[in-house]
Image (tube, rainbow, N blue to C red):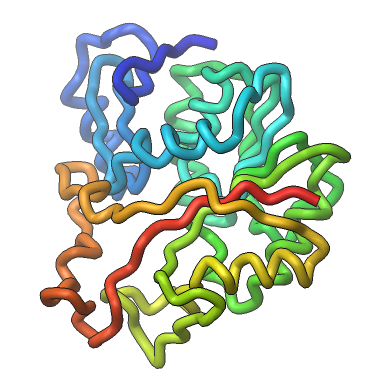
Length: 257
């Protein structure tokens, strides 16, 4: 591996003299939703401070040294690099978005890690890929059928393996909010579940889940030169979203057979 991690920043490659051209190349690949990275000496800060979620996820996952791991909806691969840095023997990312693949390829020019694979496919096309630990973070509420997602994750899980499932949610028990349109400014959120609803989805899929963490993530987003995107908090009006819904929390579950 040709990279290091310090204070959550993934540093790839030695400093380069042509920082301006490197910056322009990075900007052309944006916006960058995940980060932070330091590439050839250039600091790329993403829309999400991804190190904060990773710290919670790896605590729930436990020791991943020597394990094969999958990251479903891997974006540009921030978590793939962190998984390898934590000792995973092989990290496989699935994401159907070409922009994210291009960002990963740019990063891996500097990282040169042959034990990371980016596969440009969604969770529906994971095929025969299997892993000891499957991470699915920030994905399930963007899909119309949550139990279909869980069945696909289960199909990729090796015996004795575990799933790290992270989702937007609300403290509403077994209930589930289904927005009539946008939620906190986003049109791509199909539901916002209570923790009991997630537990029931898992149970109906032949899985059991344990709530590992819950938190308010309003401080995990930022606007940077590489990610001039709206913040979720731009759509907070007091104790409600701009659409009149309760404000979201983040829930992290450890899921097993």
